[in-house]
Every structure is written in C-alpha cells, then in structure tokens.
Image 1: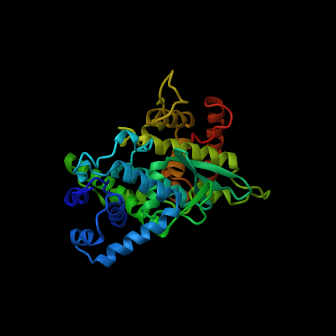
Image 2: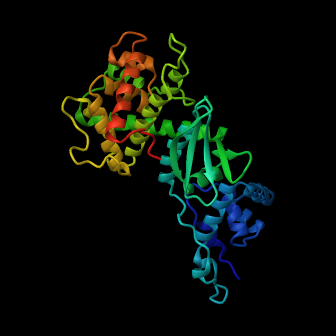
Image 3: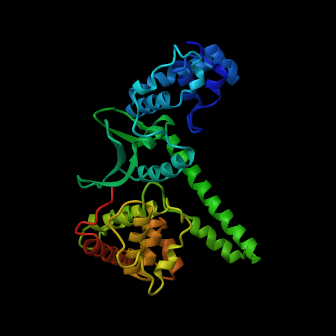
Length: 371
C-alpha cells in the first residue's frame, strides 16, 4: 500500500486533536514514517518519536483508546490509499455510533462538564460500551448525586486532551479533572465572559449611549463568579443551623441543581442570549398551557426554567437564578438585590423549598436531575 503523505498529513482530523495524537495516528494508522512526519511538522524526529510513544502508553485509558480508535476509523483520507487493490472494503470496517465532536461542540460541553468536575467530590463515571457518561458528586453522608450527563464522544475528547484522568481503569472508570482541565476551564470562562462583554459594548456603541462608570462597575460585579471548586449551594449545605442540622438539606440542594442543569441545557438552543430576568416580571409564564415539561432538549429545558421562575415570582426567582444558575455568591446577590447582610441565605432557603414543591407538583415526586 502506497500512502499519499501530503494529503494524509494535511487534514482529516478535527482541529481539537492534539499534535501528539495527530502524529501518532499518522504513523500508526496511515503508516507514515517518523522522519517524514518530522520533516512536515518542522521538528526533530526524536520529538515525534517521543510523542508517538507517549500516546501509545495512554491507550490503557479506556476513553483515550476509544478516541484514537474512532479517529483512526473515520478520519483516514481515502486519497491516502492509491491502489484499488489495496483499498479495504469500507462496509467491513467497524464503525462507532457517534462521530468525533467538532470544536464548538467540544468547547461548549467541556465548559459545562469541567465546571461540574471542579465541585468537591465530583468524578466522571464511564461504563464500558455505554454511549453516555455521568458526573457523580459525593454528598458527604455516604450517598452520591448525579449532576450532569455527557456523550461518550465528548468524554473521549476530554481524556485525549488530558483534561480528565483515570487513575485506575475498571469496568466503571472514574475520571477526575486535571490541572490542564482547570486551566482550560478558566480559559473557556474568560473567553465566554469577554465575548459577552464585547457584545454588550457593541450594543452600547450601536445605541449611541456611553457606558457610565456605574454601569461598568455593575458589569464587572456581574461577571464575578463563585469559586469553581463549589457552588453557593454546596457551601451553604455544609453550614449548620442552631439545631445542628445542615442549613440546606440534600433535597433542597437537588432542587437547585435541577434548575441549574435545565438552565445550562437551555443555553444550547438557538436563543442563547435569552434574557431570563424577563420571566421574573409579573404575569410572565414559561411555555404556556400545554407545554411539555417532561421533554428533552433545549426547548423543553427552557420551558421548565421559565415555568419554575414564574412560579417562584420576583424575589425568590431572582435569588435562585443568581445563586443556582449564575453561581453568584450570597454577598454579591444581597448587594444586587438591596438586601441586608446575611439575609440572603434565609431567602434562598425559602426559595429552594418553594422550588422543591414546584418540582414535586409539576414534574412528579422527586424532581431529580434530568440525566
């Protein structure tokens, strides 16, 4: 079999694939020599050899192995095989149920999942031959709760990029976020906030209204987020009341996490710039009568969030939106709402009790996460 090196090294793989993995696939799957790869990439042959060996050692990881196998099957250029005699029967090649994700999908899903993995006690659980992976968080009392679900293709890409790592592969492997994953999450959040800020400034410039110092300060305050290692709910759940009981019960935390998951899922739809504050005005309703609140996808999630905020109303809806969805700290929420210090956590607990009752009544008893 004779390979067209220029065609095979020029492309065929998604942009997010690391250079080391790309060289490994070119060498192993396409048969391109180490020296040829070194000449085309402009580095020394020993560097390419180290990359190939490093990636080979990572194939013990189930997600990394699946990612390399999938990329090797679906992204080998047909022009790399010049002879019909040597061309394999494509119908006999094994296929994967899902193609590798594109760059935008990976960034969007990675930011959602890496945020969850930054929470204390959170791991990504992956079972063999399953199309989905789940983020599970230890609640501290011997139980665990599921906080997110992601396609296996996204999890494979994250493992290949060294954003997550499994120390002991097993039938059900548990992955934790790495230092590289935390750095990538910070980059994604900064890029998202800069994009939102640029859009706001462009809108202000288009309207011809100058941005005042007060507005600028308010914008900076709004961009402030709670610690990535935990959400405001998990921090309050560790506190104790005067009876020694947790300030927020696990049921109340689950209700807030349910709203947050719906909120994140709703951002995947076409109306990503949805102004959720509009649902807190009097008389605003979510999906209206007949809305399918048990459905899946961004549209159904948007209806569930809108209905929940409308049921809570102004005040209670504001505090759960800011603390559960925007991940603003209690001090920031109290300042923005004009409340006295240390009163916000009481209002938040009342709002979560009302939100829990809403899920029990509208979506059935339990109101657990949609995953």
